Length: 276
Image (cartoon, rainbow, N blue to C red):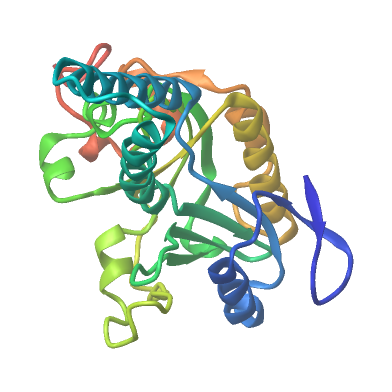
């Protein structure tokens, strides 16, 4: 889905809807990152919602059974008095958790939490290794990344990862150390962006963003690669043919090679490891 850019009136923004914070950040970053091109919101997969629905129904049924067991008559009001508050209490934290987005601009990315009080991170394309953009299945959870990265790297948070139950598709790339990105500009207000300190970062850390399905993943990769190509990012030529279609990652040396993970960050003893 594409929508019109407010400033130009041209149909230029694809992906998910623009929230108030997305609009504010798009306005703030326009000077250095250019126009916003795409909004991708991390989402829970269908399996998660199905499981959550079953839990909600089971909880309501248990509460009603308790009423019946005590001889309390069950009415529409009694059902609503439990089901609605229970649903709201569960929905609010899930909604907050799901406000994790990746924004693709003409000259960079903004990725992170978009609820008030959280600070998404800004990555110009020249701080990202464009040649390592990959679509994958099998690294949607940090424990799966643990089959690729050395435990010391994991403990030092040498990767940036979204984590959504029952969502299996991911886009990944090598970028700057997330700790450096978070630490830069801490004097700013919490709701403002953290800029990358250019020239002091190395694109050697694995960034992973979870996408809800394969179709959305392919669209995100194509938009990202095209934006990098238009911006003249080094190493982007031919990357789309390597990145797509999404590859299943099983945790082998060949998988680490495919993702571009530096050798010194790879876990020892993985299948195909020549260092053994």
